[in-house]
Amino acid sequence: MSETQAKSEIRQLVEQYAYALDVRDWDLLGRCFHPDAKYLLMDGAIVLNGPEAVVSTLSVVGGYKASQHSVANSHCVVQDGEATGKVHGTAVLYRAALSPGSVLVRGLRYEDRYVYYRDGWLFAARRHIPVWQYELPTLPPESLKIRPTAR
Image 1 (cartoon, rainbow, N blue to C red):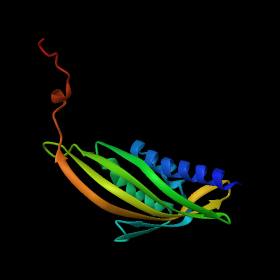
Image 2 (image 1 turned 90 degrees about the horizontal axis):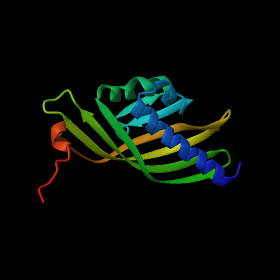
Image 3 (image 1 turned 30 degrees about the vertical axis):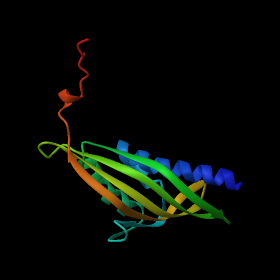
């Protein structure tokens, strides 16, 4: 496999991880990780071993009304069937249970180790690093409607 193809497939893995979180597809999320994967949540404050632990912990995202995990930029080095990478992104989480609701926005960096396993690239290790964060109240839906202006 060429380096270009490997980097493309790894980028697809990173995107699949974000997509799985946002659509609450926990089976898909689990398939992103090698059976012996290690996930260091909150910069290692919580250590998760294996896909099942990752899914059971990260499924708390499902408690939010909606989420959007966006992948921004990344850097990947591929060598001999393994790879390392750094990924930057943003997570937006809508907390509807609060009154008024709020939106939590967090800038993230991930430090990853990938391994080619069976027929594709998987996370062998992933460190989730919060970089910055803020939370604001949401606007009521009616405030988002476009109103005609007088001319």
